[in-house]
Image (cartoon, rainbow, N blue to C red):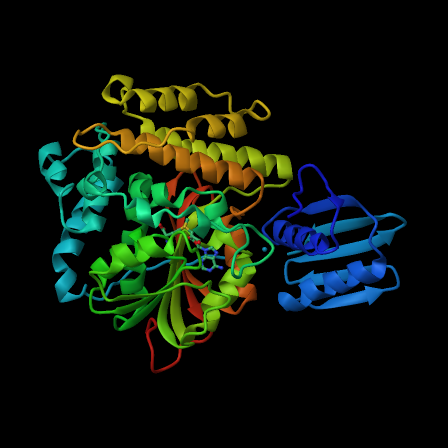
Length: 491
Ligand SMILES: C[S@@+](CC[C@H](N)C(=O)[O-])C[C@H]1O[C@@H](n2cnc3c(N)ncnc32)[C@H](O)[C@@H]1O
């Protein structure tokens, strides 16, 4: 695939689709403009055919001139001009947005009363920030059967200065059979014009360590609260999009155990983990992407965690909408960055955003409590000059090298390994491959463009800035069109 840094020669005529797709997504996701000159030996006839093919794929209107094509999406326009021996791809952002809030909640399902009770107590500690409870009681919750409660307890303890890890993560037996390198494909089954998630992220490590991501469980509780706030009655079926190895899907099932959950996950590497992790719950896994999924189109509730930035944001929203009942509810939890005005500013924000999570996850770790290889990793991560060109790619190559799983001690080494994953996401984000984050205001604008009403938004965890629209972990509640009188919706 052609990359945008540095600007490439178009060595095969198909590359032009990827380049145009990226420029569309960059501008749609907030970059004011992007201009690229590409050298090519291909004819305009061949190139224009590929560009119109891309436009047809994403259902974007286009107009053709003798030596140019304009492709329109609701928030961006990309013009491709033919110049002798080269081609000019020029994208411009067009267009703004609004949020909303929530207050009342339907009661939690009876089978989840204990999970909700513990979760709400822990959430109070997150919001007050003060250690009003004995760390000993909270540490007991690290062993809770519920992954949501155990993960939240580990987050609260970390905020109190104790770098804890949930017990189920410490006990997790990595099944090396599941980590088949042949299952790692570069090209996704759908969500085209990008690379696959697993080509950049170590899926088996993600399956183990993501539970130490700051605010991972907090976003799930907020997602559950929004479901209870914006539903008249709790949905009996839920579509979960981009389930990955299943951590968020299991937490969803713990909060809503009476619902049948369909989990959609295209990654061949993540899918075996998803099957393994969800086997004890009412969850049916489907190995496909959202733009390919051929299941029902009337789910009363569709959710997605951490996946919206893994494909073209508009195609993601369109896919969510297609499978949700008219008047149904869509909840999206994901990381968002702060508003940016140039590619350089976006890279700087992405770096600082991911480093904020890294610093939070590692804040209370002492080197001497770690195995030797993890001490080396920790030092390299803490010492890196994040603004030096190439330093982050080099750091990633270095800290990714050794892969061991230690057992039988209470070292917080899992947190160090989580930060390697965070670094993978950071580097993929700078390269604008796999990770293509936008900012909250823009996400809401794109949702409204697609006929989704934004009815709730909250930044549940801050990485940069003080406003609700700054970088961090966000949760959005969207209504699919007008609320119908049969399904869920606020009265
Ligand atoms: C960061 S992971 C999130 C996994 C999980 N929801 C969690 O929060 O731990 C993003 C997931 O989105 C998936 N994904 C990528 N493209 C997708 C698509 N077109 N449709 C659905 N999921 C997709 C990736 O394979 C990956 O598993």
